[in-house]
Length: 469
Image (cartoon, rainbow, N blue to C red; front, side, top):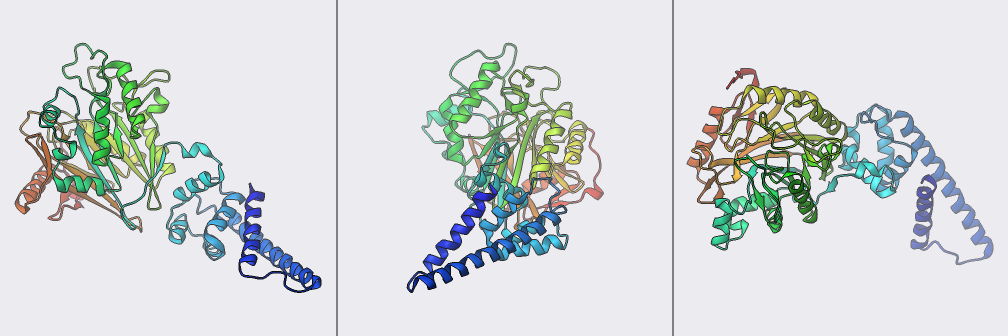
């Protein structure tokens, strides 16, 4: 590998010489003299490159807290990609003892991201490329991510029946401003609260079982969905075969998913997204069901979902994500249906997830909005409710998007974009009065967090009190 890289560098020097017109136009002696000079230049470059590379190797420990194998080939790759000037600046920074942020400051790419590009370019450590998606950002420097709650595409459910009867598209079932918001986000995630399939048998004894035609997966693409969670209590509604078919359909439509798999290893897989030089980790698990066990947990040899009623397995997933990403998202299915106030069991799990390395927690399952809380500076959106899911309960229509914006300097802003479901359509609120009313409701049910008049989250955890509902 090193010889290949060096060969490319030397070839580049020769090509440059040819391009600038330094060619043989005089005597043989002149040519030989020119060749000797060229060889001397190459030797000088090689010696200088060796010295800088050796310096980087000897001083990179502090900037490599992620324990990547930053060997000679990595630094030569860095040199070939970013050139001599930046390579020298890297060497000088490493000598001064700068941390891993030096890579982002010099290149606009974090070390996590550079590692992915290095592995892909050089064909090494290919296992680190598993479930990694490189996204074309719609923003210049920021990373804008939107998260929604539950959607249901079951063919017998009222919202889908309405769409089919009226011959509408899925985009007609959302307000124009909401569709634009979803499609403009760099990353959009929601909870896939149903199975995909054409047959099979629903689980006996289960009150609600949901199945959508495989072609419905196209609707995710129309809305701009980039990833879904299958860690919920409906992914197994049609048993093992139903879950396997659901995963195959999503694979066929190239929609990444987390929280379920053919075995525990697959169900525990983390999805990584490279966006604007940052590596984002998305993980998912379900606390539900807490009593009845219709939904099977994945084992070493059997399909199922990743469960976190007892969080030991999921904590390991979060810890792994923390080691390999700049930002870690926990997307969790939990809580009590219809209860606007989050419970002590949710808060206890949230604290465990934050201590394991979560940067934000996004919840769903309750079919209604729950409040927001901060713990150790980490925001917890306990439930985003139903996003497009007809549910005949008084507090079910209110919903919204959790928005996370990671800026170029790695500072993060959190917001809540209020929405409302009515007459089979989800709309993003537009009037100032309705928006302020939505903020007031969220502030009433929140704890240690407040939404300001612009929809931004404010950390007030020092004045928080405990809910034990």
